[in-house]
Every structure is written in C-alpha cells, then in structure tokens.
Length: 585
Image 1: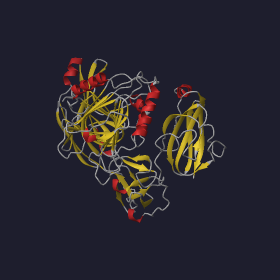
Image 2: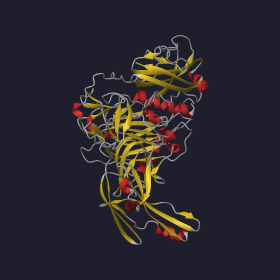
Image 3: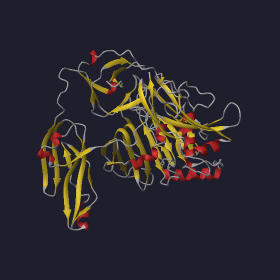
Image 4: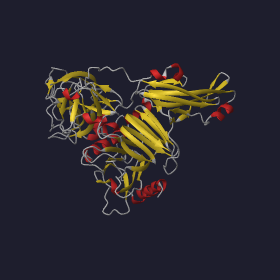
C-alpha cells in the first residue's frame, strides 16, 4: 500500500474512532516538557529491536501476520518487526497531545555488541512505514517516512521529523530510508516530504548517502537533500552539500536531550575553495589529508540570463583518478552586464597520488599531483592512534561512561596509558583523562608499552527514571542556584562533592495547584550553559507536593556524571541568572 494512502487511512481511524480525548489545557512548552518526561520515564525498558509509545497521539498498524498486537497507550512496548506503519500527531494545544515514539534498532550492528543500539526518535507529524523485507532480514533496517510541513505551535516544539543516533562502537550503521542508502556514524536529523525532498542534517560524525548510483560523503555541520516522489521513494541523486545555520536547527535544542548521547547542534564545517587550476599551481598538493576542498571546475559567462541557464546541466565532469566526483551548478549570478555559471565538486582530501581530469568546452585537461601526509612527528615510535571514522571519547574506560568529546575521522592523538575497561576491552587513556576503545582506532608505535592505569573513574550509576520529589531526594548532593559557590553554605552544598552522578535541583513552592506553580515559573526554566569542558546536562521538570499540607511546587532537575576537577555552573532561573563554582573530588 502506498504511503500517502496509508496516511489518509490512519487519519480516518483517528477521527472515526475518536481516540483523541479532551485534556486539561496546557501551554505549548508544558506539553513538550510533559511529552519528553513521559518518553524518558515510560521507555526506559525498551530493548534492542523494540519500539516504545512515548506520548499521545500515535496510531499504529500491525504487520498482516501479527496477532495480539497492542501499541495504543503511552508506555506500550512492542517488537519493531510487528509494526507495519506508525503515524504520529503534531502538537495540539487544545487536546494537549504531541506524538512521540522511540525505536531501538540493531541494523547491521554485530550480535557481540548487545548493549549498543541505533536510537530512532520520531516526533510530531510523522508517518513511518516498514519496507518489505526478505525472510530473516533485520527488522526496520529499511523504511519509508514522511514528515509534515505545518508551522510550529510555539518556539519550544521541534519541527516534525526523526532523530537518528548510532552508538560510538561497532562502526557505521547501514540504513535504507526512502530507498536512499545511508551509512551513518553518529547523529542526524531527517525530514521528508514531496515538496522539499528528504533532508538530512548531520549534527555529529560523518555519513555517506547514496541515491541513483551517486554517493556523497556528508561531514558534520552539513545538510544534504534527496528528491522524493509522492510515495517517498527517492526520485534523484543527492544535492550538493550545504553548511546549515544555527537558526535551521535551533528548534531541536530541547529534544536532543532525549538521545542517549548529547551532541552539538551546530558543528563547525570548514573547507577550502580553489579552482581546478590549483592542481597546476601546487595548491592541491599542499592540501592536508582529512580537510574538505570545494573544487571550482570553471566559471562560464553569458550575455543573457537565457544563455546562462542553457549552460546548466551540461556535462563538465571532474575526475580524481578513475572516480568521477558528483558535480553541481551554483545558482546563476549577474556581475555587471554578464551572467555567470559556476560548476563545482566536493572532495575530501586523503594522502596519495592523483590524476585530476576535467572537461569543458575547450576539451579535456589533466594534471597529476600528490598529497603527502604530515611529516612524521613520531620518529621514535611513540604510540599514536588514528581514528578511521568519528569515534567517541569517554570519561572512563567503558561505554557506560559519559561521552565527553569526539575524535574526527583521520585525527591522530598520542595516548598516555591503557587499561582493561569494564567491558573487558582494552581502552587508551589520553592526556586529558579522556578514553577511547582500542578497536575503533588504528595504533602505530610502541602502544603495548604504555603504562597500565589503575586509577579508574568510578562506574557511573544510571540516572533515576524520574525527577526527585521535594520530600524524598535520592541524592545527597543538591545544588540550588543560590547556594552552590565553592565553600559557601547552602542547601546540600559542602564546597566539594564526590565524583560520580550529581543532581542539580531548582524549585519554587507554596502554590495551591501544579498549574499555579507552573504559571509562576512561566517560560523561565532552569538551564545550564555548562558544567565544565565537554559536559552538558539534561534538565527535567515536574510538579511536587510536600509530605504534609496542600502546597505545590514546580521543580526542575538535571543529572550529570563528573570526574574530579573544578567546574563552573551557569543557570538562568526564575530567581535570576547566577554563575558559581564547585569542586569534585
């Protein structure tokens, strides 16, 4: 059944059956907060190849051969292999609904990594359909999806779409989305509709996207679009890469916290632009392995706009050796009385010898050059490790520790120690107390002689499934925005705390209802701009009541796992902005 017909059928079910019931009126940001809290609380038990109903409204259709299917209530968990279609509803302030669902997929991850999953987070006006798979195929490794184009009800609600995050171990994950092959190594945001195509925003890591036999590598900070037809099937090759702006992804600022690992929203994508004549001048030979170059093949000029447009789409190929690079045409521009057409291609530099071949109206042009690696900075054989792709750096030797940074593809560092991690694997320790697993990097030099590190950070405890209430706080360390200065008295503050998980707690109280408490807080939530290098905190919000009496309060909490050191803590709460410091021992 075609995807657009399924969408109409599902909406008919929603209205005819009357699944949407009236809810108590909540503000738009409160609905988003409630939905994300429900997702965090209700979906804790979802495992590999399972889907979880996070928040209303969602309508699911089972596969034809599945019986006893139940996936109609928040908190329901079912096998993804049982799902044929999912349809989520956009945010509705009147009904206080906003569809949110979570899937944990195996894709092509090996069975030897049972704790590692691909996280797929769906939200807003999204319809997803499982692609027909052969027997014994990994469930939901291939699917079709469409996302709505409607405006957002408020700034706090993300645009409808899908967030996909792969684990840092196990290598790139292979998915087929709308007939597009996507090899993903980290985190991407996707939207898809017939008018605008399927867009992929790469928030972290690297991806390789292939459609219509054209493959395009996508670095972090770049978006790429593939045209799709009305049934969400790919209808053409990928577009040229384009760096996205902060405004294009700022709406994701709240929901990225629902992913297993925090990611930067706007990575820095840098590149060098040069003409293909840079081959003859030696510029290309001086390029550094790993960097991106925008190769401008030629600039064509025309006397009229019609003549310039006639040049668009003509075959002016660019070859690196035997590989033809995808070429693109920049929009026609006018310079004084001349119209300009520019042809270009993207190339990620790597070491080796190349023969650059280009063709234009004057014929074929060839230029040979070589890119050499950086001079050997390690002639004595000092241990050096190099990342083949984007890999995670963690606060301890194990995937249970927080991810604090990333090594980019091709980046090399020199570890200072080694240890057997909590997962039984060898981990390298870097000079800044960050750790990387040995099997996701390539070592050179005398790595086996590195000292064995015995001072391993304590294994972090998983965060609680819901924020602590005002009368039964499960953590001994509580920092309020008005009393967390190092060494100063304050509720729960001793000036120094033990390394491990720490709870940050803000609250107002003394109200007759949760609604009055939330109204007092309004849009002023506790936010944390940082707790030291590489550390970010996930906030949650709840309504609390004391053991006695009827007073209600609005509480915001955040959890973070910290290693020893001195940290800054910036907050913006109803009581005002505050910056303070504390020490972790």
